[in-house]
Image 1 (cartoon, rainbow, N blue to C red):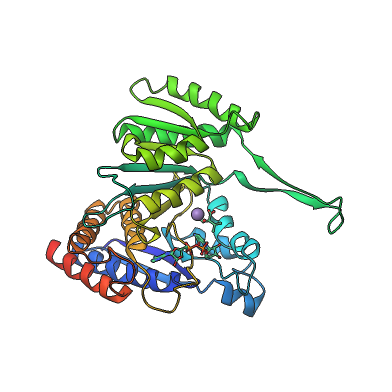
Image 2: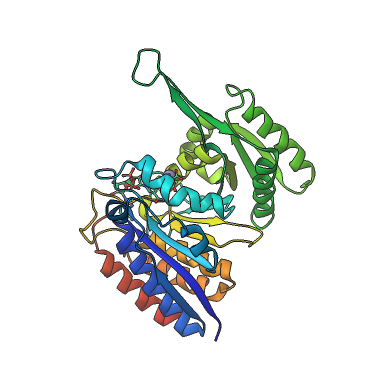
Length: 350
Ligand code: NAD
Ligand code: IPM
Ligand code: MN
């Protein structure tokens, strides 16, 4: 029996509940369809930081390298550990070290879910650059604490980094409706974003079958609200993609539905799967987090591993549950009730 080695990092807050739920669904699909998932649990989190002084051990990246995939809940507990410490100690180094440069975030309305807009039929695949740009970590502070203090945060864009994410987006468009919207702010940012636009035009020449439009992030935010159904593949830099995907999550009914895959496209390193949302301190410990975003992310993981049938079965089970009103409104059902309904639908499907 084919068995996959999975690194499971629940992390903080609701990350613990939603990964437990997703693991139940993944294991049920695996046993019905005849493959194995062998999870190893890592307790790397803010609690781990408070005990040990690090978010993950020094050899954490090397430890993860031997796994087929990583499933992560959420990282961050700002009440006790600054986000700049926790995220730069765990989540962001994994994305970077494993060259998970393509962050895939699908946005569509599941059956039975009413978003805040009249946006029926919208189906966006956001491709977020995931290793450089505004998240490069370059910069610093001088004259700290004085009136002359200056803080810089340098966004670094490389030709390799920009070209590969654009090619990835155009390739995805070929598998969908053949349209790419590339998002920048090249009217105000005259180096990096003009560079991005130039590379978009170059890459587009290799994809005559894909239509492309280039938009500024501000106009794009308005378009996502006014006409989300006009978009197919959206490609953006790290920070712009981060913001647009919480907006996409809102249009699809909330952060509880938004899935995310951090992909290393050449498969030289493991890819990581996680919901778009964070640790949700406001609802942590209440047992009411929506696990659907993480279950969907786990389905993307199985698809990436080559278990397309299991991935499709999980998504059908999720859709069967939401069509009956399960998990569609915050707090109506508990995390456990939503998980049980999805497991029951899965059992009927496979
Ligand atoms: P958040 O995504 O955790 O929460 C935003 C809002 O959405 C909250 O009201 C929350 O209750 C709600 N929400 C989120 N997920 C939900 C779910 N599954 N079901 C129901 N409601 C849900 O964002 P935040 O409050 O800005 O961040 C909290 C912490 O998480 C911070 O430390 C932040 O840095 C971190 N964070 C981590 C990740 C990650 O690990 N990938 C992502 C985003 C934020
Ligand atoms: C996300 C999160 C992270 C990001 C934070 C927690 C660093 O918001 O995955 O969307 O900005 O990438
Ligand atoms: Mn985000």
